[in-house]
Image (cartoon, rainbow, N blue to C red; front, side, top):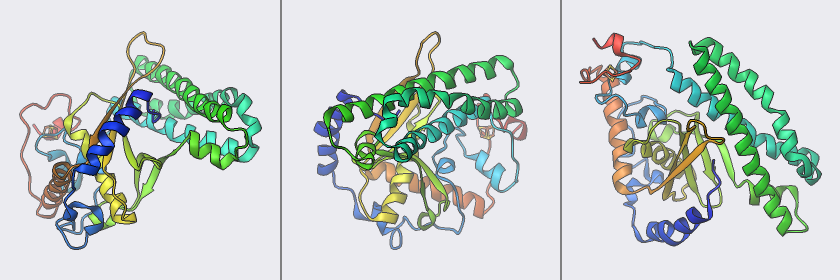
Amino acid sequence: MYFFSEEERKYLLKKLIPKAREKEIADELRGWNWHSTELSPPHDIILPVWEIGDRYCETGRDVYLRHVKKISVPPSEEMVAGRIYHEAIAELYPMAKRLIYTNGLGICTDLAEVLMERLPEAIVEAEEQLASSVGSRDAAREIGENLKKLWAFEVSRIVSSIYAYLGKYRYLSEDSLINHALPFVVEHKLDGQYLGLSSNLSADAINMGGMLICDLKTGPKRDFHKLSATGYALVYESLYEVPINIGCTVYLSFPQNHPTPHIDRDFFLITDEVRQWFIEERDQKQDMIFYEKDPGRCQMQGSCRYREHCR
Ligand code: SF4
């Protein structure tokens, strides 16, 4: 999921990283200036990054319904599936690292088998969630099948990265191997308080080598998806005062009759414009909650979970 291909690596090194160096980011839009600029939140209202970056509702009325009218609706089938895939990844990577730290490099010979043995536990956990939230058996079966494909695929990526480094370096400590082969932290906790965001945020993955933030999506591509990685980048800058210039939205899908998941990564510069966009979204949503302003209904309700409340 977060292993970049050779082409992507080249694109990052030869194109995007030099471009990021050239492109000056306005200092007032760096997260570390939260205290003295428009980055400072207008109200004492805490929101998660996903809620600010979520533009599926064109007017933002879903935020109004949740926070002002206190209406909550169950998650959609797609949301449950997305959560299950997220959780599987969040479990698998630390598990691989833990196995190496606990057992030493010797475990690497059988690492694929050991990790695959843990799949049934992940399936049981997913089934518990599916039983309580996904109505159709076919949908639940499909999500279960996708989970197996995802697990097997990620295990193969983890093991192949580990073998590449074990094959290259003869004397390698467990710590060094993990930092080379699995150089990212998944579900990295961040405190977004300085920016009016939750103090318990979870960035999907931070690539510690490249200081690049990845955000995983399981639906079709939308332009506002880049707001999520941008929000986490601003928070990271506000906490550690290091610049984060590149974001990556990772799109996970499961094409019919395909043996593996399909993964598409969208790299982008975290420019002034996208930073400004994130801040405007935050301000607008905080204002809506603070002044209890109903933003009005959308034109096309489609399959929105709140349509019952917007008729
Ligand atoms: S029904 Fe329309 S206005 Fe209401 S929350 Fe859904 S998308 Fe927004």
